[in-house]
Image (tube, rainbow, N blue to C red; front, top):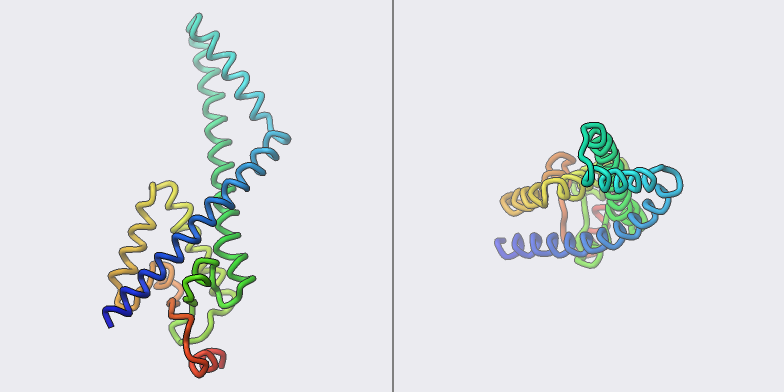
Length: 195
């Protein structure tokens, strides 16, 4: 039993690593696209340019007015980049954790497909569409968005919860009443799951 538990945690971790690598690739591609779009529809470049010019002036002749203008521009730039990064992370997460599982069916991300594990309900049924969406959005929030803003602490807590649970459930599995099982099940069990 302990070996099965270790094997399932290892396979979930393997799937998470694959999904994270895919998320990074998708995220950088989307960040590039989003930055191109934002450069065309916002005045972010103008603000950055004005900030650089005002900073040069401020270094030569520091005044309260220039410092105030720099603070306003700096706040705007930070807010815009924060917005761009959050949008990119969320869209990347949707692609990796929601769109791909809907395409691959059975709620499998690409990592879960490669690791040969599937998501089912606590009642041993394949996960229904609405529950898959809820579970995957929670996974995006926990693993991606909170993961970035807590420098990986929240996903590590989630992994620790998974390791400590006797049935290897992560936080979003506990909330949604789902579990991840071996995808290489005998046909009788697969047929029973479909009923």
